[in-house]
Amino acid sequence: MTRSNHMSSFVQVNGIRLHYLDWSGSGPALIFLTGMGSSAYIFGEFAPRFADKFRVLALTRRGHGDSDYPDTGYDADTLVEDIRQFMDAVGVEKSSLAGHSLAGVELTHFAATYPERVEKLIYLDALDDRR
Figure 1 (spheres, rainbow, N blue to C red):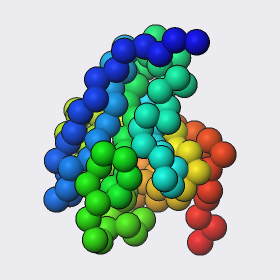
Figure 2: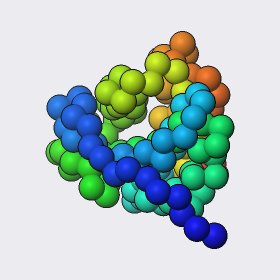
Figure 3: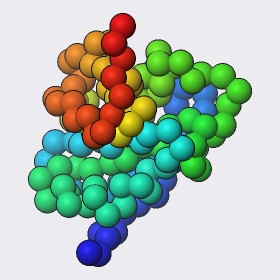
Figure 4: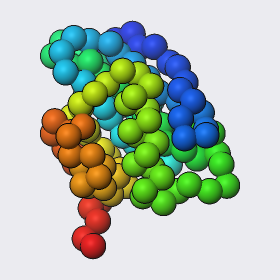
């Protein structure tokens, strides 16, 4: 299995710098969100498989990988705002979101907060928030 080329970059959002990968692609946006302890690189062999039908991106959450490690902002509301501002920064109005592990909580909260920004939610062995 070979990895397709991707661009590694950063966005300044919500007062911090977040790392992301962009496999380009054509079509609607598909954004992969990482689990606890992972970076966007975890999707390196999986995400490119969707680039023929989607614009594929993967975001590394705050406090992980090459993203900033601020002292605060690890609550669900702030993490959701990070995603929204990331989408704005890369020009994505609406996206399917695929989240692994802990990102399931972010998926649920994001869809509840910004339903107009979500096409579909994909839970990849993800946690959910049962509140």
